[in-house]
Length: 388
Image (cartoon, rainbow, N blue to C red; front, side, top):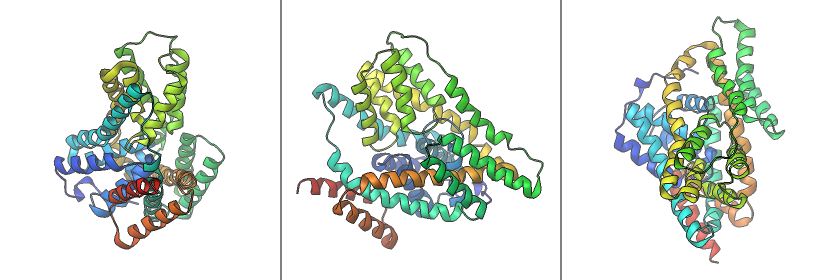
């Protein structure tokens, strides 16, 4: 699977990049798997900004660095389309809508002591998001799972995930397995060390310890979230563990209930789940705290993408590194499939939700309706059905 050079597709304007990612940031409900599916639908299928093979490589690259995968993919895609300014514009525009919505929710929470009700909205959104993710999985799978070894890696990743294996371990084993298979066949001279080195960051992340309780300050809030954004691999559950250990147990800045509400808001709003930091920052430090916490947790993603992005074409040109990337891509899709199964169990709760999912899939397959419109239609349907 050869990745084209970045010059093969025309560059776009910063205004185009801003418009696309602002809209995605406003409509990307459902977590990272759904965000990735919507980006694939909008930028690969519709706008043809890049080939599906290169999209998969960028997605695989986000799993080799710490931070929020879907946000890092947005940053990669912005850089791919409009260079270094596009890197900044895409990431910022994807984050800002979620940050502002989370800030509004935090204000309402502090003022009224409760979260805005979003159950009816998500009741209609989740089923159509399921259809969008399934369509993306089908299209990406046809590109990534083209050989028996890749299919075997994907199946193994699904089984390992179902058994509770760590996501990073799954990705590391998947990449090294395909590289080993390549060596058995041809024993090339190149080494996978360059690709596997980022996996060592997981060990570094696990060894990071925090000092004893410290008094609250805006500076310490920023540094805490900068640390989290710099070392965190894995899902939102890993984020919850990080936040609970320090903010609740060690420092006492938050109560357990406040932390759970903060994580819930991060999942209920569109865009990155990491905007949980915005909510927490507002609770403990007002509007300045919200801004600094958001900046701290997302800043490392821009730095890591800027440093690793230029390496992706080089990795693809190396046979061994390319095999590792193929393995990571296959495992990434397997992990998306597991998340989709979990999403389906949570989303398809009655006849109405099944009908919405089937209807959404039909619109995607038959008329290729834009996924953003599907999400808005699902939200309207959820609100309408809640009033019945």
